[in-house]
Amino acid sequence: MSDSPLLVEHPEHDNPALLHHFATPEQQRNTASLGMWLFLATEVMFFGGMFCAYLVYRYWYYNEFAAGSRSLDIWLGTINTVVLICSSLTVALGVKAAQLGKRKQLVGLLLATLVFGVAFLGIKGIEWYQKYEEHHIPGHSFDVSDIIQNYPQIHIDPSHSQIYFSLYFAMTGLHALHMIVGIGIFAFLTYYSWKGKYGPEYYTPIENGGLYWHFVDIIWIYLFPLLYLIDRKPLR
Image (cartoon, rainbow, N blue to C red; front, top):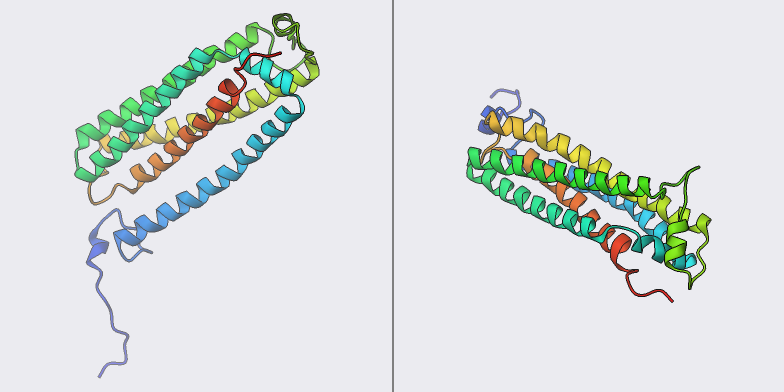
């Protein structure tokens, strides 16, 4: 009887997508998904601090935050919300197409997601430019005299208004940065989907990329009412 250890064959390692330190594709997929969820948990804490800061300052300086919110273009914000919801749909359908091995459909859905992502950034750029023209960007040229004239019935402190717009640009800017990263990820996924790398046997990158994209969309779903909607009631 040989003293050598019993060698167990793993036919799964014939799969080129299976890394050597995983026993099965399912183990690799579960590990990758766990890693993505842990990363998203850290992102939740990061954005959560900014949301808390916004709510605290809004409580302290309600008039300035309400007036600043009403100066935003609600129609551009609404259009961008619809754009991101549509992009989440194309991502979800793309994951399904990968699972079913529909390569052409997968590539088309990923391209549609990219178009929606670029459209969101373009619309956000238009909105930021409007704020630049109105001198609402915090800094040396910051000026909210137009907002003060619109609401003569309430006291508005320009320094407190600057806090609102600082948080507005910080939160939407950070979100836009995540969108840019997401577009880069999906450009990569689109290219390799076109090359036929992903299919029913291996679609983990598509699935995890979708998780990241959905997270970024959900952040906007919270930003939109917080920045644009909750202070739309008449000011006294």
